[in-house]
Amino acid sequence: MSLQPRNGVWVFKDLDPSEAAPGVSRMVERVVMEQLEAIERGETLGQKVYARLRRALIGGAFQPGERLTIRSLARLMEVSPTPAREALNRLVAEGALEFEQNRTYRLPRLYPERARELYDIRVPLEEMAARAAFPHLGRAHIDMLKDNVVGRIAALDRDDFGTSLQLNRDFIFAILEAAQLPIALRILESLWLLAGPMLHLCYPEYAIDRIGIQRANEQIAAIEAGDVEALCHALRVEREEAATLIIAKLERSDTR
Amino acid sequence: MSLQPRNGVWVFKDLDPSEAAPGVSRMVERVVMEQLEAIERGETLGQKVYARLRRALIGGAFQPGERLTIRSLARLMEVSPTPAREALNRLVAEGALEFEQNRTYRLPRLYPERARELYDIRVPLEEMAARAAFPHLGRAHIDMLKDNVVGRIAALDRDDFGTSLQLNRDFIFAILEAAQLPIALRILESLWLLAGPMLHLCYPEYAIDRIGIQRANEQIAAIEAGDVEALCHALRVEREEAATLIIAKLERSDTR
DNA sequence: GTATGTTATCTGTTATAACAAATTTTCTGA
DNA sequence: TCAGAAAATTTGTTATAACAGATAACATAC
Picture (spheres, rainbow over the protein chains, first blue to last red):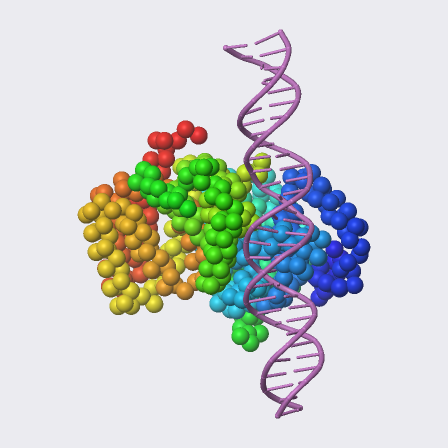
């Protein structure tokens, strides 16, 4: 498993065949070790592959429209095809990958309509969750959110967009998790996964003028003031701004 | 694969061990046939098992909290554990099954909070979809919906609650599909699957006074009148009535 | 050079065997 | 009769082999 930076993103994609067969006994040994390690923490290999692949997808490690194969993923993760296939199937079930007619796994292409739909779903769902979360948001949450914004500003100051995006995600889900709605949370997490490649596509551009920071501060202020409507309004505005930016970007680069 | 009626529902659940081993060669032969058959229509065995199991779950074939095992499902469907496990994992990814700490598959228990959450998610999502669908709803759709209601009344007249519930589902999704939002549709289908066992739990009770028919007619009238707000209002009212009934029922029978 | 047919490789799918952990059953001792 | 230990069974997990279909590479014929 070798990770490499590509276009400023951490990517693990080099399927160099030269390192594919480094002695079977050595490989089996390593697999067994990983297996034990995974079992130690109660995680199956399939879950581990899924988690890694998910992180890679959010991180923008793969190109939209790119094809993924069971065996290459298995080689990459140093497991057998079985858990690799399991991870791919789970991502297909979530909509993060597409399973085509000819039985190939592929990253969805990014069309403007897809971005539009994603936000049309997220906005009402997140608003519902925010309303449910509101009574549970106390001093501890507010402090955490403020720290989060401080961290984001610091990250932006040093052009660390990866950390900034991660903190952006943490901010949103800190609120959503407070709603204590497990089904909604699962859906929203899968929607974040679907949005991942898009966000990554134009995040520096979005973050550069720090409009997101401003919206975050508005949301914090609304929570402190006990104003649900203001929170929902700031939330809607932020998402709509992001959606507009992404859709515009996709429309410019839409070759279909 | 033997189906049997239980509590008025079609169930395939008898795992009588006596019919488990009807001669290996005979079984292999049948599996190969099924395999060829599945490939003919471009469907994998895993997809077939998934589709059947999904239908069974919606139909109320399993009790909430009931445990499912890979091998018993495999025996039941006359396939190997691999596609059976694939189907179970896919249902876990959708939230229709729970995967517990001790690595067992189990149907979620029905608590009032779960029903409440399900409707809190469905209502804003379906309203969004209905608004998106509205411009596409023409004469053909209206006629289809009217036919649907006629069929539902006829089904209720002969106490055919299974058909009535199926037509209820068709009515809802006829509108939702018109929105042409693939991601939203996928989510709403999985939510319908999650709601399946609940609906089935108290459907006759809900259908008996035909309040659903009344709401359906209101929705049709709203579409004919070109009144989006009226459509969404009728939709919200219908879902809220159903939610109230289900939650009340679950609270009465909640042993936790 | 282009088209066509053939071979080789790669693809996903599935059944199977082996393994460890959990569960159930059985046996044993009081 | 009951508690507890031991054996047997069942569980999910994973690697592997075999298979059919799809794709690619290559050679052959025009």
